[in-house]
Length: 287
Ligand SMILES: NC(=O)C1=CN([C@@H]2O[C@H](COP(=O)(O)OP(=O)(O)OC[C@H]3O[C@@H](n4cnc5c(N)ncnc54)[C@H](OP(=O)(O)O)[C@@H]3O)[C@@H](O)[C@H]2O)C=CC1
Ligand SMILES: CC(C)(CO)C(=O)C(=O)O
Image (cartoon, rainbow, N blue to C red):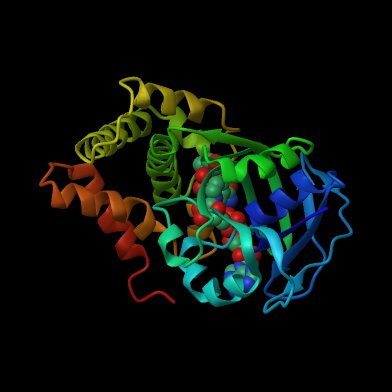
């Protein structure tokens, strides 16, 4: 029996629990800021979990720990997470944006490229779509993959993990920026002006990636625009939910990071500069 911990019972953490829960080879604890019951819905139907969250700190040690808090909250958890590790624990950081693996002084720490879509509103999580985590093709992760293959969670071990990470960074650069700044859901791409703006923003992000030595294929922008077409028109993004709830966003880990690289390579990225400034302005002096 494997022991897994999910830290953060928000959208991704709760959905991860739901995807793993039917595998009886895994014993799962899920940690939130307070003790409460998980409440998840999919297609307007409630999913009965009967699962109660736990709170940190914990003295239990786990074989796998999934970190599902926002990138902005990672630093506050490092000590608690390391205290829950044994020598062979896998720490899987399930976040968007630049990898925070280096924050953890633990050899088996990995950044997962997350293809799961959901929203936490009050204490309810709505599960929209997708069930995949992409991890590096590392022998250490084979047991985890085999064990999760018996569940609804799809773990892919990919030898081009860095490219996959950048591809997802660009996915988020496009749709998270546009939905957050328009305060509209994926349907906003139906508007031609917005579609064209998104393509131009992606083109700038693609240029930055290429300058940074990331071998993304020539069809990247087309492929990303095709992914957006699979989104339900009323689906938002994690950044859209953040601005709708007046919360701080993860822009420093997504747009801010790409913008920083663009500046360091002295690239002309007018749209990226504008959206990054607007997102920085959104949270200026906001708590
Ligand atoms: N939502 C989505 O569709 C997707 C999100 N992602 C990425 O996944 C990551 C998680 O996002 P998401 O699930 O949307 O975020 P949420 O805000 O829905 O969930 C984060 C959860 O972490 C909890 N949390 C924060 N600090 C602690 C702590 N110290 N102890 C326990 N729990 C804590 C928060 O509690 P509280 O609610 O009380 O603040 C919240 O429930 C982000 O990097 C995001 O970009 C990636 C793909 C899709
Ligand atoms: C765009 C999406 C839903 C892709 O999984 C995402 O990563 C997010 O909401 O931040």
